[in-house]
Length: 229
Picture 1 (cartoon, rainbow, N blue to C red):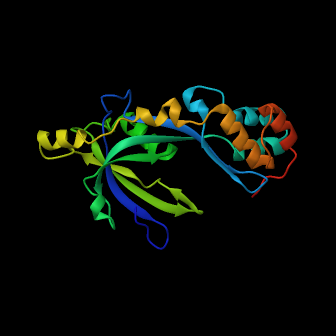
Picture 2 (cartoon, rainbow, N blue to C red):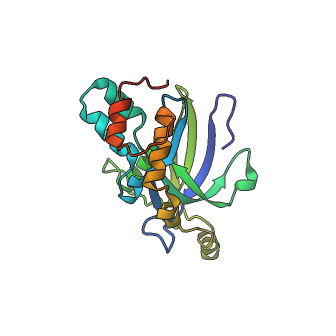
Picture 3 (cartoon, one colour):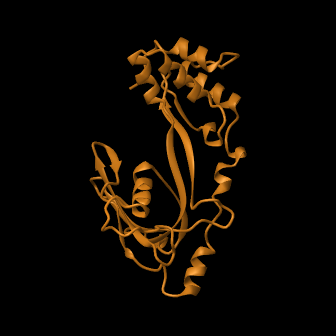
């Protein structure tokens, strides 16, 4: 989205149904993004996405088990974060009209995902459930981003009234045919191996190769070191 001087932006998008090759209209990916004591950054997808062991998750678990508040705070800073990716149609994008009517993959976080789930399972009885991924009975999503205390905030985003995604069945089919399968984004080949992640982690934390240290041993040796702001 184009943003104004205050960092705010808006667009109108439409979430699309699941691709025939996928199980759901979205895929979820865990990742880590934090700065170590060396000043280097660790930004990698987590193997826990695949249901497998990940050195950072092991490190954080070891820190949490000490019971020390300083260690818990360090674990919070390097905790994994959950993101989602779905196919969308860009209905309106002020400032970038060339993107309108394009089908693209959209990466979003917990707040927007909660709005999707809330639309399908409303809290109050007088609210009608909405399937946000339905091309016929779904609705456009008015994406509203504001800068709140220096961070993007999507609380003002909301769904419009239900309406078909296009004026005819032929147009709807044409849009859906532009979707791409999402499952390849979480294929094992897209993730670095445990050993690669371990070496990267140790480099970020102390600037040296990991060698044969376990995640627990790294946590023990690193827990008393200062964490970069």
